[in-house]
Amino acid sequence: MKIESGNSTFFCVTTRGTGRKLSPVPERMKTGSSVYLLTPLIVASFAFVGCSVPKEGPATITKVNPEHFYPGKVVRSTDRMVEFEHSRRFRGVLISEDYANTYGHYYSIFWVSEDKRPVTVRLEYRLGKTASQVHSKEVQVDAPKSKNVTKFQVTGDEYKTQGPVTQWKATVLDNGSVIAEYASFLWK
Image (cartoon, rainbow, N blue to C red; front, top):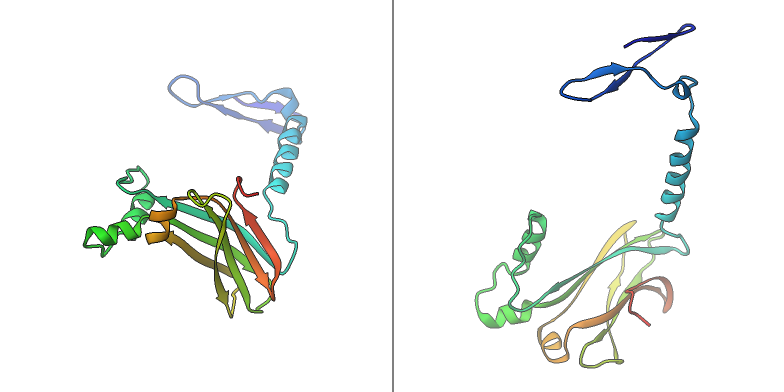
């Protein structure tokens, strides 16, 4: 259907029934910009502001991907990437002792750096059987790029004897001072 208003013609496509039909555009839409479009734009702008990562120092931790591989649990998923990650961890494992040493927690820390100074990436964590005792692992990064990934794992005897990781915190240190931090929900 065609609507003529002055020197403008308006069409609206709807999909009622089995086919497409042209239906008239409501009168409020003929003016160009609509008040009804303004509200979603305002909501979307606030949503994007909430998703931004704060820049506080020369480095920022953008994301931490924790993965936990339980003994005796086989991952089944409709997402092939999830299944591939599980099978990749166990590639080349031949005997049951190697399987037992592969189970545990794996952490991938994604962080960005503004300068190329050497930094230390630290993972602090608490284990189930040691309760409040804080364990830590560090990796020295001598030449960081603008986007970096540092990986840690808590596996083997540490995982078998002291239990699973209950809390964790990732930090980036420059000469002993904290320049970026990202913690799990339970970290105190």
